Image (cartoon, rainbow over all chains, first blue to last red; front, side, top):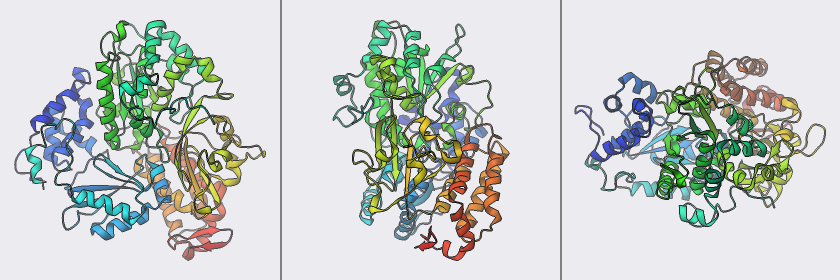
Length: 189
Length: 446
């Protein structure tokens, strides 16, 4: 879990990636990198963005902290509270509901012990979050975990396969700019 | 068997690499446009093609392009709307993840036509894995000289970037998308000014859907007139349909516009009929915001003609007996589907996704969700049914952006065509509140 006593810092790899991204916009429009940088921050700091992490984002982009807070609270992908090791984002919208997302949610609550919208499971592994349409309706029901879509989770076997895969992950998968390995800070995850 | 202009090679191994894509004729439109055509000639071909915006609105793409302001010395932008979030729609995700170079080729040719030297693909944040695929393909295109300075020796420069969203349906609205691309909350802007005059960074900007841009290469290669030969009337070319819900074969289908709806649902070449041998009850044909139609009206118009997959045929009868092609998000519901529950689910979606700027939408979507929730859970009153219609009417037309209509239309249409089901939820509240309970011609199906 992220502690808030020490001021957070981006890893060198993340800093380089942030600078690459900022160059995609006109020099005076660095704020445009807000969403991509928040995604990087969430990946770097344990799956959520604390107020301190958001302040760091503001510093890196050269904007006022409020400009980050109003964005992080508007978009649903940013977790503003600590989360378990894996956040299971379960699609609950119409097309997924037609193919059993309500049953899937109940099943996931039963086997992980976590509740949708509540704290992580007792083992700290899973946070359950209901989300709106993930644009994969033909492969419903769907769960997203970080950048991966788990599709057609309409059998207990398919759900088990997903959970087994996640339980076996020691660390989250490396991102493209982390070719030299995950930042040290992540080893605690 | 219809022609597949976009997806013919979608399942070819290696088509996601530049080499594999070029083997199947990829990037020909860039060579043709940059070496042999003026930008205006490209715009002219797109106009002739009759291509209409594939994101949902159906506005002619060539005409949209011709509105772009071109003041001297001011940069202008092309932004691709890849914020695919309309429930029932998942075509762009498939297209981008399997055929990344098709979108990139379309972006280059279209940017050239518009005179943009920097272009962006705004992709919804949930699709970060597709952003990785696109960035890899873009790097290949730079290395091969299709992007960057002096492309193919033509003197034309273009930089192309992919930008992720953060989870917000509203960013599919083009001005909310531009706000988001500027690093802000996705609040739609008041119009005018339109993006064509003041868009990204207050510069002239065109925003087009992924599928619209992906159609530009074939239009440039074969000519607008050839493209316009496919389809019927003002519905030209092919359309990607995302088929989901209770179908035997959900998935993405590229159809020639004009295909009968009945053939699309029941033929083995397409959706293969309704799953589990059940009967079809209703269809939402163009993404969650278009009016739902009962089986009889989706297969035939009120006048008894075969309903076709075209902009005109699907909207035949207006909102009284018709619907819209929209984004092509085709949601089929079998006889065990509870329309009240489904309408409540959609209302919850719009309430959740309202940006909150306009009171009618912010408050109205919440009211509709609450009223539908109590009807679905056995606490409704008969007056609630007309209350729903009244709230929907008061949202419609009273908001900055079309999310208001998108939230109001499905509710109004569900009451219009399935009022008996809403009434049953009041008269048989206890039964209706059982999990899985469905009204079926007077009998309860649990």
